Amino acid sequence: MPNTHRSVQSVALPAESAVTRLYNAPDLADAYAVRLPDNAIDDPELLARFLFAHQAGWVAKLMGLRDALVARFGLKTAKQLRTAGSAGSRERVDIFRIYTRSAHEIILGENDSHLDFRLSVLQQTRNTRDGRARFLVLSTVVHCHNGLGRFYILAIAPFHRLVVRSALRRAARVGWPTA
Image (tube, rainbow, N blue to C red):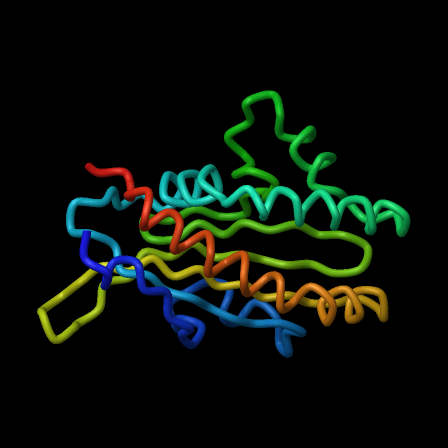
């Protein structure tokens, strides 16, 4: 697979994404895109499930550390969220609750006492030098409720960016599911 399909780029929040206008002044807002191969499936939910099923091992270790720290503050842990969806529920993708689905986008997220966040997995078609191409864009927006939320976002933002970029690169390297 060409490297163009593995290159992850920071992009503006897509105008067509439902998360773009979700919060008036988000405390965190970012988006990253990777080009999809022409034969990749086009279902955003299946792409999201694939993406989160193929995370690097260090991400699980980082989430374990996060869980150990946030449990002391009464925040939801990844383990608790996975347990909430462990009965094979189609209403969760990994640790994330599904909020909305459309033909090109799935909105995931969670609400907690310190913050609410939404993650968009959007399939987008763009014009490129080579013609039209499909991209997968992961956008995250966060709204903090209090000082704990703002501190949390400040502390995890650099790790969040590493995890998102890693997830997109890894999924591209493994090879997106095909139609």
